[in-house]
Length: 377
Image 1 (cartoon, rainbow, N blue to C red):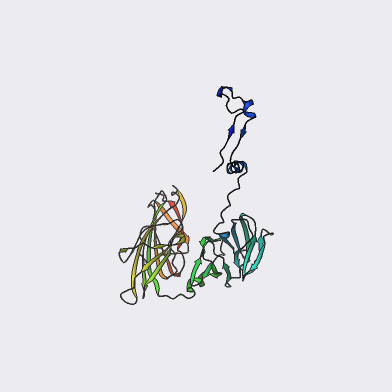
Image 2: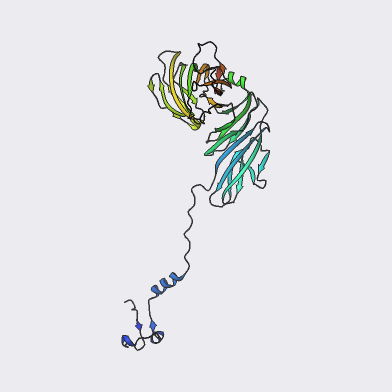
């Protein structure tokens, strides 16, 4: 039989009205050991709950490559996160190309499993910079990129008449102007090569074949006074087998519609406005598919007297025989231009500017339009 709690109040039979603090001071309280143990445990400080182990203890979160053609360097700025504060070896780059410089100087960079790795026990985020040498023009610099969810290349300036070729496996990208480009998040070897722009236009990407070419393309770009821009284009692609027309829309452009041979399609949109438009197997070899698309953009409002605006067309890795471009502004302006396109002289005079880009591959037609208010005599 369990012991009972016995409470004795002095003589135990005092009337309720006679109970005072003095009588309670001499009283006894008897409880079970289990109850005493629980009371003592309640007065002790509580142990904090163990912190759960993160599913990933350390990782490379972002990498930005900065190419400086004048300095002849490629700088990789990396963001590393240590989630639990323990020691970790974090791969940040392949070891095939040695780094010229590291920041901060006290960063623990070692070669481990053929990779450059950061050894760290510093909890939280930290930044690391590695600087690599950029080979001379025509000689590629190959870097092994470590997988990172955010990976990009920033080019501040290219030498006049030069382009930058990026080769990743069978994928080739030609960069013709300063800007930011996405790099493969899965990592792997990427070769950076400075080339003469004319040579790059005539050289097909490594491993590629001309199963498809742009036999003709025509675009019309309309700009209104508030800076709204509408571009409509028709592209004729000649191909023997099922193919994809890859188009890189200008920065800030938004696709409105796309049709292939009269049927609406939804292109596959990848990073940085890059579209992939599927072209079905033609009925006969050498058949042609017609792609029609339209896209919008927004620029600053036109000035009342005179001003300048920059326009561009989509870029495609396919060889293009001829790209015609009609640029239209309000009729009250006189127009002139500069850029990598030529004026058209073999067509009847029409409104706007008639421009053309011929015999090109993976180049973006660009024009800087100068407009001036037309004076009346």
